[in-house]
Image (cartoon, rainbow, N blue to C red; front, top):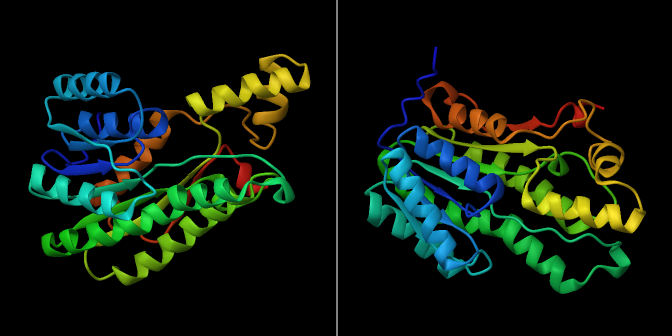
Length: 265
């Protein structure tokens, strides 16, 4: 039997949702009758096409806000826009993220600052603006898209690992602060998902190492994941919908790994 999540008529913001994980999460929410505010980078015409198609496909309101996740005032305006457009804000999914790979002594400082701003600090600014709305409603959900790299480290990803560890710590702290308000805050920590970003890494690694893309996937990208397969969008969406629903009401401050056993090692 289909699971009834009871989310119809609610509203959500998903940052970084014009592609990849964020887009899949937004689409899954819309499929459950949730009105969604999209956010992210891309060609304006393509974004509008995505917005219109999602709205028509699921029969919900879908809006777009182009907030730059390095600009606190734009993030605050995004939250206010969702409240204005939908009349409420039930779920905030802090998903926006970027990556750069280099040894610490070769890591460009501007890349460090960008990754910390987008992957970590934007979650603070968005949550700070969303909390008064959720408290006034008497209910809300904040979900932070962390990573297996919020739980363990890999070399050459210092900024990303630091940011995602920070996201997990921020999640726990916020969860404790709102524990008696019917608001929850949790982190989802995926292993590798086959996003456009990862597809680009596969091609780059294959060229750099002189091996096939298949070998890169098995021996490099998924080397740490015992099940040797990518995490599926549907698996991430299933956890998000559970956390957003009343069924997930007692899950608070958790960093939930979906990584094929990576962080169990």
